[in-house]
Amino acid sequence: MSQKFLQIHPKDNVLVALTNLKKGEIISWAGQSLQLLDDIPVKHKLAIAPLQTGDPVYMYGVLVGKAQKAVPAGGCITTENLKHAAEPFDYHGVQYKWDAPDVSRFAKRTFNGYHRNDGRVGTANYWLFIPTVFCENRNLDVIKEALVNELGYGVTEKYKHFTRKLAEAVANGDNLDTIQLSNGQPAHHRVFPHVDGIKFLNHDGGCGGIRQDSAILGKLLAAYANHPNVGGITLLSLGCQHLQTNDFLMELKSQYPGFDKPLFVFEQQQAGKETDLISAAIRKTFEGLQLINQQERKPATLDHLCVGVKCGGSDGFSGISANPAVGYCADLLVALGAKVLLAEFPELCGAEQELIDRSVDEKTARKFIHLMRSYEAQANLVGSGFDMNPSPGNIRDGLITDAIKSAGAAKKGGNSPVVDVLDYTEQATKPGLSLVCTPGNDVEATTGKAASGATLILFTTGLGTPTGNPVCPTIKIATNTALALRMPDIIDIDTGGIITGEKSIAQMGEEILEYCIRAASGEVIPRAVQLNQDDFIPWKRGVSL
Image (cartoon, rainbow, N blue to C red; front, side, top):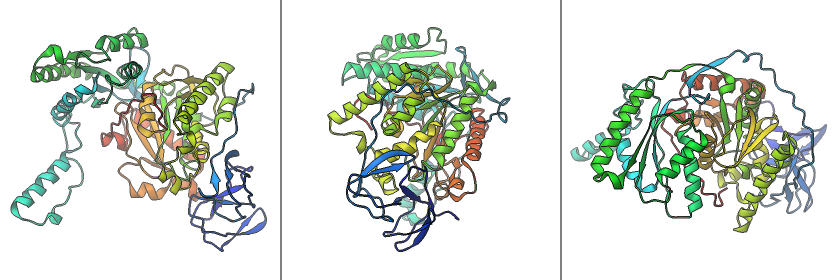
C-alpha cells in the first residue's frame, strides 16, 4: 500500500490511518513533517494540528465531535479525548444542483424479473408464511421443518449429517475430533423451479403490548404480503389476538385495492386440532405453489429496481470504501430512473443539513426534520441519545462518535436529490432517492426497507455480519479485503481495492450495479440468500438505535 493515511475532505483536521502507524514515525503532510506521538491503529484518526479543549473536529467536511482535552499534533483521537457533537440543522431553502453520472453503459440494460399486476417487478418469487400473532410461531416452525428441505430449499442437511456422525461416534466410543463437517450442501431437487423459496415471518407481536404496536405490525405484514418479491401468502391466526385477520386484510387492501395474489387464511381456534390446522395449511400452500410456479422471469428495464442501502458491523473504512462505492451505484440507479432507499435515521446524525439541502422541496425537508427531531427527542427522553449509537465493535475500529459513524454511513445515499421522506412502512412510489425512517439496528432497518418496497438491499460491512431478509435478497459488501478473505461465506463483493488504490470509487460502483443486475435476474444468488439468513424484526417504535 503506497498511501498510509488519508484526509477525506479539505476541511478535515484529522487524518485516517490506512495502515498501522507507529509512535515516533514521521509522516509528510502538507509539505511539513509530522511526528506521531502515539501508535495510530489502522482505521483510527490522528490530529493534524494541536487541539484544545472544546475545539471542533471535522471529518467528511462536517463537525463530528469536540475535543474533551488537549490533543497534540500527531496524537491519536480516542473516546477519551473526543465526544460526539453535530451542527444544528434547519431548512434554508437551498436550490440543490446535481450532476448525474454517465449511465450510457447501462442505458439499454435490463434484468429478468417477475412482473406483478401492480406494475412492479420482483427480483425473486417467494411464498410467504405470516403469523398475525406470536402464538402461531411454533406452528410456523413445524410447517417450515416439513416443507423447506422436502421442497429443495434447505441449507441445514450438512449440519444434520454432522450431528448424526457425532452421535454415532459417541455411541461407538470414537474420538469426536475425527468427525469433520462436510463441505458443500447435498443437492436438493426443486419441486417448484420458478419458486425461489418459502419464507416465514416469525415475530413476537400481534398481542400484548400496546394497540399501536399491533396496528403498525399490521401495516408491516401487509407491506410484506404486497411485496413484489412475494408470489403468494399463507396466513396463520390464533383468533383472539389484538391484530385481527380482518385488520390485516383491510390494511392489505388499503395499500393495494387490486391485490390478487393467492392468499390462504387459517384460524387455529376455528380449526380445532393442531394437526388439522397444519395439514390443511400445507395442502393449500401446495395448491398456491403450483399457481405461482407458472410465473417466469421476463425482461424489465432498470428503472423497475428498488434498492435499499444499509451498513452494519461498520468500521473505520466504511465511509471511505464500501459506502461511497454503494453511493455511486445509488447515483447510477437514480440517473436510470430507479428507486433508492436510505434509512437508519440515528446514523444520519450530523449529516442532516446536507440531506435537507438536497431535498427537492420544503415539504420533503420539513418531514425529514420532524421525524429526525421526534426520534432524537424520544431517545433523549429515556437517557439514550443518538450519541450512544456506536457499538463496541464500531468504536474499536475507529468510529468513536455517532457523527463520525453517521457522516460515513450517509455516503451510501450518493449525491442525488432527496425526492421523498417515508415514515416506517410507507411505500416508495417516486423514482429517485427516498429517506426511510428506521432504527440503525441491522435487522430492524432491513425489515423496514423491505416493507417500503426494496427488492434488493446493498449491505456494507467492515466487521462482518450474517444479516439477511426473508423477501429481499441482501448483497454483502466488504469494506476491506481482509474481511472478504476471512468470511468468504457471507461476503459477495470486496471494495478493499479502494483502500489500496487499485480501484476507484466509480469503478467499484459500476461493479456493484453489474452484480445487482445479475442478482435481480437470478443469475447469481447472494450469500445471505444461499444461507437462508432470513432476519425479520418489526420495530415497535420504542427507542431503538
